[in-house]
Length: 135
Image 1 (cartoon, one colour):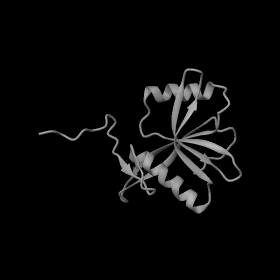
Image 2 (image 1 turned 90 degrees about the vertical axis):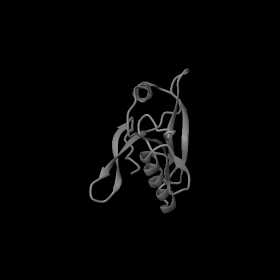
Image 3 (image 1 turned 180 degrees about the vertical axis):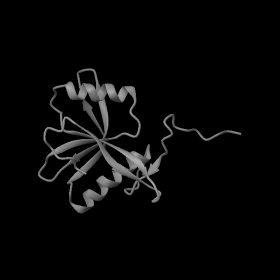
């Protein structure tokens, strides 16, 4: 008998409102918010898995890149569990000085008792440069 393969962080692949599959419930919840904000006109657009160059040798794929009304841009990262690699790349991003540097907002999620769902919350605004969080 073979057991279904599990993610090492117990993340469950989840389908978002836009019909795409995401590697975790947290990322799907953040994607749903981005999708609804785009439909409501609160953001112009969003892109998934945006690759940014932190240093000459280091690249990082953040979960989402958002384009706000007026053309302002920011990155959004959905993190249920912080790995060592993530912590190192976040620290490099904050210290670095490169052309693509935009505000970075990190969101987590937690189970809501009694409602059977999850709630997304802002964990950190890393290098927000005075920009308000998108949600």
